[in-house]
Image 1 (cartoon, rainbow, N blue to C red):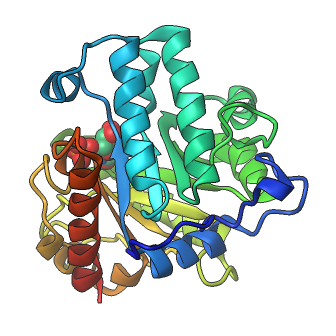
Image 2 (image 1 turned 180 degrees about the vertical axis):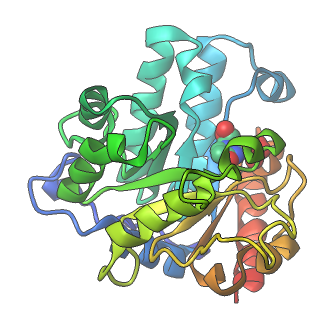
Length: 303
Ligand SMILES: O=c1ccn([C@@H]2O[C@H](COP(=O)(O)O)[C@@H](O)[C@H]2O)c(=O)[nH]1
């Protein structure tokens, strides 16, 4: 992470407008550049009730507003990616969503890429509406990328895949999640004998084929997976897209786990930390120091 970075690092300029009348560079190009110049780190904006209390804030809209503004002002001009967790905003209803809208716009204006962690997934016709909500440049929640769930069938994501590509955006598709319960679905074998995770990753590799330096479609693969991918699995993480790796910090994984989990795909990993950085607030300076230290650790681990 370059602490002196202040300009837009996301291929988006005010001149082009937030939605961007000019054609946006593909997400994989923008993400690679952001990781290379700002450091390979995604910081999650997860305003847990417990964190609001730790920061001396109320579990109310004013607390949510202050928390979010502090994180965006401290980090959006220097970290590669910010990842607001939509659930923590939705729980305050429309006023929480308004805070989220401002956070997305201000983060992007300050140069961070925004991955909206909303984990949407539905039948194709409804996926088209989710694509309108998060991947249409005219939407108030327009983000650089969206997390999506493939468990209604990878093909049900088609409207979001197409919209993301057309808008210069990306998707992160759940493949091997960081929580222990994920294995019962993701390691299950389908009719062809392949695990669900391998099938999802195979689809992503095909969608990204020919895209350099990274395709627009990434996978979520938890940093918590330990040795579970070491030999004897059908999982291939070389999908030509980024691997968003949550689970570092509060969920127990560390930078030292990354080489073991990701093997030859290590160079495409985007480590993600929420509480592990946010616990250093409410001081903006302390948040910046924590994020810079994590970015350094991650860069070393991925080198
Ligand atoms: O497999 C997954 C997918 C998403 N997440 C999300 O990342 C953050 C993790 O927060 P920490 O405080 O760093 O544990 C959170 O928003 C999750 O919903 C994940 O953890 N695992």
